[in-house]
Image 1 (tube, rainbow, N blue to C red):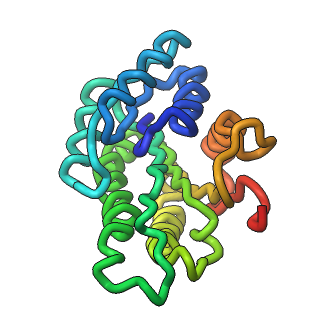
Image 2 (tube, rainbow, N blue to C red):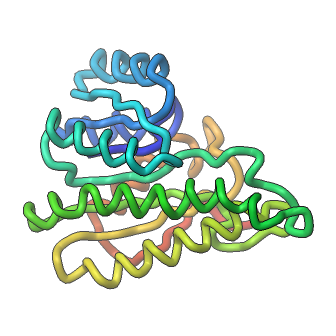
Length: 218
């Protein structure tokens, strides 16, 4: 599998969960040092993993990283797109100009489209696959103080839903997990390990498109 936006919280937890099931894991992020640390931790737990450096706002880097991951670890059967948005994407709507939306759209639309287009041919050759989009609560309920993510997550959500409807007949399941609020260590539903279990369940059960990690007002 490949985790785009892999970090020491959710990304590492998902890598552990899928790794326990025998998946080799490609971790894609910007920070080589952080990637190496996660790969080392996974290796200590018996999980095969490698890190690949790419910025999701640079589609050529992202597609190259996923291509290298497939060459090194095998066809990407599961893709998770879950990078954490930049704080400067979250401006109030009346303070958001058209140029302020470039970053969010690159991050949440161009990035996912590039990633999916890179891995989809391999999934089709396998005759199976799973694509998981992980978003914050503004994907479901737009917030006027977080205009960038509200607008870009809505577009990402629509793209994922279109893929869900189009690819289901090919054995490729597309799902979105909306995580309201912050990921919280020790939380019954939003601890990284609990979220990783939820994502594993979405991969296995293959039911519906949008799912919620917790209540939207949490």
